Structures are given as structure tokens and as C-alpha cells.
Amino acid sequence: MVRMVLDPAFTVADVDERLFGSFVEHMGRAVYGGIYEPGHPSADADGFRTDVLDLVRELGVTVVRYPGGNFVSAYDWEDGVGPRERRPRRLDLAWHSIEPNEVGTDEFMLWIERSGAQPMLAVNLGTRGVDAARNLVEYCNAPAGTRYADWRVENGHPEPYGVRLWCLGNELDGPWQVGRKTAVEYGRLALEAGKAMRLVDPSIELAVVGSSNSSMPTFGAWEDTVLDLAWDVADYVSLHSYYDPLDHPHVDAYLACSLDLERMIGTVVATADAVAGRKRSRRRIGISVDEWNVWHRTANPHRPGANEPFRRAPALAEDEHTIADALVVGCLLITLLRHADRVKIGCLAQLVNVIPPIRTLDGGPAWRQTTFHPFAHASRFARGTVLRVEPEGPTYEVPGEGAVPSIEATAVLGPDGALTLFAVNRADATLSVEAILRELDDVEVAEHVVLADPDIGAANTAEHPDRVVPRRAAGATVRDGTLRAELPPRSWNVLRLRAPDRPSDLATLVA
Ligand code: AHR
Figure 1: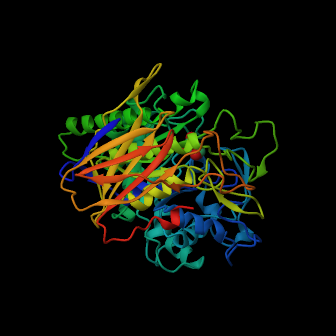
Figure 2 (figure 1 turned 120 degrees about the vertical axis):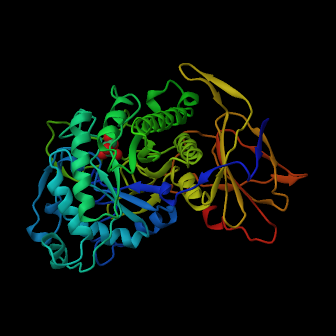
Figure 3 (figure 1 turned 135 degrees about the vertical axis):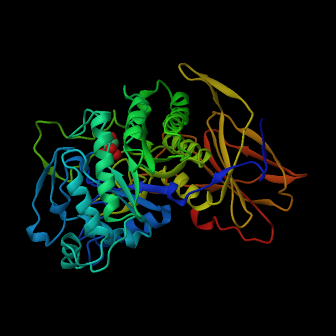
């Protein structure tokens, strides 16, 4: 039995809608064959796959980070604008691929408008610096009348794009990064690039690079130095984290990996606040978790070998997501929501074909992976105020981790008074939940939706795109001010409570 109290008086924070972002990098078939495939039966006049756009909108993505990732650290953005026939084909060193530059900033801006999300652009602080960064901001955001703004106009886009969110580089702490830097080198560069970018457009928000994962030898020290140096321009510090099932001896340990994200967020918050303290600043830096996901990195190739030929859009990291992956994604989403007071931006990495919730075949179908569903549910229903929920219940032991709670849960109170409880049952047995509802007396259970399967390795494929779909569960009740529900073994659960006179709107998310 798991017990908890849901009380609107105990809150974490309002959810920033930018928590439900994603990421499109020039990597593998994310762009070419993913969002863009002229000649595909569903392609629109600009070559964008409308079957993918429909799924992106259904997923509920609010922000899309672009163009990388590791790719951005050696990218010359100027190659990707202007007449297509004059754009160079370039070697992409990050992914040992050929970059045809058929899609660049202007095409991405067209696509993002159609997706309904907002852009988050990254600048190259690996091989380039202040100049390229401030020119890109001018290209995107300045009104006509100066060199780079006029170039945009010449390319057919008279109005500024008004891109608000910018990443000051990507993973520059990592030895794999082209143009890797020490924290001091990066902190100084981020300050100067950010300063110049803001002189072009004072309304932009900037994220400085944080650690690439919690195992980096510089984790913590990197954030401390970078924030110390770039404090004046940093609105957010980024945090990246991926979880590989093969890094764990068994599925119970894999299902516990959101505890690493939990600790990582705590460490970054503490470090940022320590820097604030030293500076006698009351400012609280936000966290931009702008790359997070599961990643079958060991099992599935994500980079061609160094001796293989460079090719355009090779299939990289096209992982097939299982039920176990969906449960981990569910736990990671719950963890982000539980830190809604500090985590303001999140990007599920990535969106299409590369470590993806959405997969496609060239010339063929697009389909939802298992991980699509928890994200779509959270993006749709985790809008409002996160309540402070402290479930009490069974735990299980994972060596090196200690006691892992069998249930991961959080609840969000919507502006319409509806309450949504999100819960993952990690255990291989049904768990009964009793939640005492305080100041929520007029609600009843509108819906209990479950994603689960007797086979924890079950996945969706091109042949069987709906092998795993969310389904309605019966039996959850509210009586005498208590919600009672049974959570099936190893399941993602969405319990919607609302006043009886309000219709439920889960219908389109359930088969
Ligand atoms: O998302 C794939 C890669 O993972 C990104 O390019 C990089 O930033 C991270 O290491």
C-alpha cells in the first residue's frame, strides 16, 4: 500500500510550459528523413513531412532546441542560409556525416512555426565565438536595415523571428566536443558572447553550458566556475542526462535511474545558489534540462566508425523504445515536475528518429514509440501548479543506489480545478494507492489511464505501430475524501480527478 496526501495548500511551483520541449539536431535522420523529406507522400510544399508535424503537435512539444548538440560546435550557420544551390556540402565532424545544408535556420523557423512550438537556438562556441554568435542574433531578431538583418530579408523573411531562447554552446566540458574548453576558457567566452548577443537584442534569454552528465570528472566544479564567470549573462544553466539500460545489471536498477537526475538537479541548484551567495545576489538561476532521455547507446550505434566513408543522413541512434524505457521517461518527467520551482526548460532529446519518441521510414510511415505516451500525457495535463507530494510505501534495494521507492509520483492542479496524479509503479506487482484529498471535496475520478504490458520489452514498430498504447483502467474511486486506485505492475498511470459536471478530455490519447 502506498499512502499520500494531496493538498492544494502545499505547492512546489507553477509549471513553466517550456518544460515540455524537445530537440532536433543535424544528426542521423533527425532532419533529413525526419522532419524534412521532399518527395515523401505527406510532404508539404516546403518538403516538411506533415505526418511528422501532426505527431509533433500531438506530442505537445512547446520548445524545440536546434541545430545541436555536438553538431553545433563546428557549424557555420552562414552555410545554411541563402539560395540552396549555393549552399556548401560540409563534413560534419560530430557525427562523421555529410551535411548538405538543405535545411538551415530559415527552414527550421518555417518548420517550428508549423509545429506550434517556440525555437531555442544554440550558437557555436566550439570552433567560433562572439562574432558568429552576435551576427546570428542580428540575422534572426533585428529589424531590416543592417547587414545580417538585410540578409534575412534578401532570403525571403522580412520580419524578424524574435527568437527568445539561446544556448551559449553545447557540452563544451566533454572531450568528444569539437573545440572543447576548460571551465575558465568557456566561462569567459560565454560571458563575452552573451554580452554581445544581448547588445543586439536585450530581450533574449541565455542558457550557459552545464555538465554533460553526472559522471563527468568536472561535474559541480564546472558549474561553479562557469556561473562565477558568466553570472551576468546567465539566465539558465543547462543540464544533460541520458540513461542507458545496459548500464544497469537488471531492469529494477534501470527503473531507478531517475534518482540520478534527482541528485543532479539538487547539486546544480546548490552550486548555483552558492555562487549567488558569494556574489551577494538574490537571483536564482533557472535550470534548463535541455537534453534528457533514455538512450540505448551501448546496444545501438550512434556514430559511424572513423574509417567509414562520410555519408548524408546515416541512420544513427534509431533506438526502439520499450515499456521499460517509457517507465524511465515517466519517472524522469515526474522528477522534472517535482523541481518545477527551478527547472524551467526541458528538452526530451531528441524528437524524430534519433533517440526518438517519433520514428519514420524514408518514404514510409511515422509512428509513436512507447516513450511518446508519457510525454504527451504530461505535456497535456501537467499544466498548472505542482503539488508537494510525498508518497510513503514499499521500497526495493538496488546495489549502489540503496532503497528505491516502488512508486514515483507527483500531482498537478490545473487552472480549471482538475487534479492530475502522475505515477509510475516500478514494482513487478500491483500497488494499491490511497491518497487523502484535502480541500478537494467535489472531485471524482474522470479517468485512470495506464501504459503497461506483460512484456517489459514490448515496443512499437513500423509493422505494429500500436502494439503498445495507453488504455483506460477501471476501479479507481473517490470516497470519503480519499482516492483509491490500483496501479498495475510496472506501469505509467495518469489519474484525472475533476468535478462531475466537467467532461473528460483524455479521449484522443487512449486507444
Ligand atoms: O543528443 C545526442 C548528443 O548527445 C548531443 O549531440 C550531445 O549534446 C549529447 O552528447
